[in-house]
Amino acid sequence: MSNQFPEYRGNMEYYCLGCDSRHGIDELLYTCPRCGSVLLLEDKNFDSLKNKSGREWRELFDNRAACKRDALRGIFRFYELMAPVLEEEDIIYLGDGNTPVVKAAPALQDAVGLPFAIKNDGQNPSASFKDRGMACAFSYLQALVRKHGWDEVLTICASTGDTSAAAALYASYLGGPVKSVVLLPQGKVTPQQLGQPLGSGATVIELPGLFDDCMKVVENLAQNYRVALLNSKNAWRILGQESYAFEAAQWRDWNMEDLCLFVPVGNAGNITAVMSGFLKLHELGIITSLPRLFGVQSAHADPLFQYYQVKHEKDYHPVKARASVAQAAMIGNPVSFPRVRRLAERYRALAGAQAFQVVQVREQDIIESMLLANRHGHVVCTQGGECLAGLREALRLKIVDRHEYALLDSTAHALKFAGFQQLYFDDGFGPEYEITPRREFRNEPVSLLSNPEKEALPEAEYVSRAALAVADRLGLKRR
Ligand code: F0G
Image (cartoon, rainbow, N blue to C red; front, side):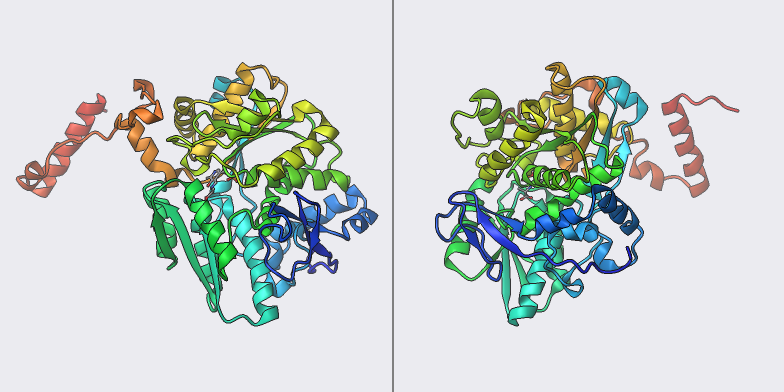
């Protein structure tokens, strides 16, 4: 049974968060054709899923964890809750999802003062959580290509580096009529992130300015030309990213008591998806309470923090993003803000005002939290560091309690952001970052012997000289 492809099919439609209009899914829509607002997707048959009890769903998803069908091995383990209009042949599986949750090292938990774990979403195929959304968006695209027999589809996205890596990866796997173009803010993605779409064979276009500028260019292109937009404005991406919430709930054996999650916020697609995912689980009785959710933003790019915590939901203004080591989240005008506002309202109505909050952290704390975590055996990126900084800030503000258990989202792999670690070690940050490296977190390689010294020695002698130099440096005792 759990090894079968599901029989259930949904009846999905876009709904507009601006004017509440509804639209069919046969066409790729990014914004409402009537009022221009952002869209979300809804399954009109969703209520029929309530014919199964929460317990039956839990058992089904637990059993499906052992499923051998490729289409159900990744994020589509939760098929019925995500995009149940796709056929098995449409689903692309590149090893997305099922990312490990790693308990924080005991010494790290002691240092922070609260038990917590880290979900390593950097262990997705392109080394960030973006693959969750792309697996869904490209599967839907494949279904459309199959249905309409399109002979060319140009996929396009703006990116701070990870969306583009994921989009280029999935597009190159699909191949055929599907081609990938990515627009990047020049000098504002890391060399590793730049190398990813290049390696996948995508067309990489760099433009001056920040992500927010690139996003406007891509929106203009999507409005005026025949391109498939793959930013999280594309609501299929949000559906795929809901799998993070489903996996987090399953990891806790579906018990949300005392759980709080920390999620870094940039374009706000991720926090939208996480909220939406938990709301679905709750509606079906798969979980009986909602976990608390904390969005985390750097003081250098904090429009959500300003709206929720400073203005108390009085008025929303985009901010001008400033230099940030959490560069992937360095966004002043998040596209998904209207989605967050709508879902946070529902979330708070069900679980209380404390159930959704946004905390603001300093750049210095972001990078040092990353270094601290990674010195304890973790592999968090700067955005993961931002989550840990957020947890520490929430503890300082006493808005989390020591009996709670935190789950931090390390949204990408540490290696993508190794350059920021190096800047810290080299004391190389410009003043705009407001980061002053401290000795205790710095590290550098120790060079012993020079090349000419090596060349002047016979091999056997070199080995003993080098061993002696190492032993001297380490103060080793002879046996
Ligand atoms: N963490 C990482 C590693 C990211 O790449 C992003 C966003 C975020 C956090 C923030 O998530 O936008 O859903 O609120 N990166 C996008 C990109 C914008 O283009 O790769 P969000």
